[in-house]
Amino acid sequence: MVQLCLNDEEGVAAFKQILQDIAIEQGMRYMDGSGEAMRGLRAVNATGEHMHSSGGLVHVAIEGDDGLGLSAGNLGLNLYDMAIGFSHEPSDEVASHLSDLVVAKLKERWAVKTVPAGKGAFPDPACLPTALEASTPPNNHMQRSGNDKVPAAGERP
View 1 (cartoon, rainbow, N blue to C red):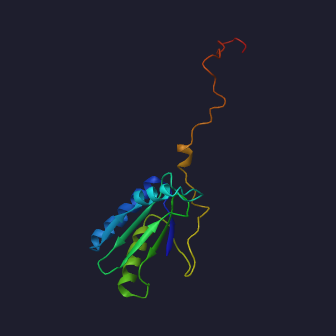
View 2 (cartoon, one colour):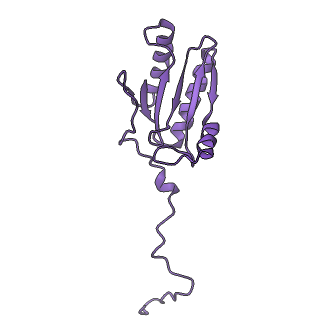
View 3 (cartoon, rainbow, N blue to C red):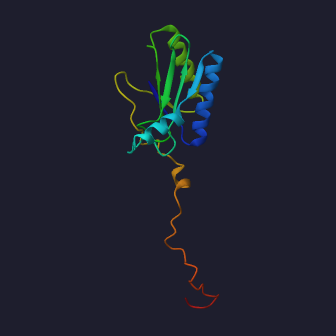
């Protein structure tokens, strides 16, 4: 398993496109179950940190006819954290080729960390969503109401 930080929505789109391109090149299927997974979380009222049931959940996979493939997602991680698990042991030559190819392509754009064997991926504190500032309403507590008189130049408030 590997983990990486996609940084923002543009990174998520690029990540999905890279996986789609790899699937096509390798004669495999690309599947994006993000919307379906998010609807499922909403249906069971899943709430909590890192659930992304209100938006931003990523759940994608690549699969070959022989069962070889990978799945990737951010459930349980920060919004732009991504964990990727491969379906075959790295000792299998074909599976190793796929994982090496995927990791090499991703390393062209992001830092990719290997998750130690027997461990899981955890939210990376260095991968906090920078886009949250853009989606947070501005702090309007100092705005004047429509009834406030704005003093003219030189006039005292």
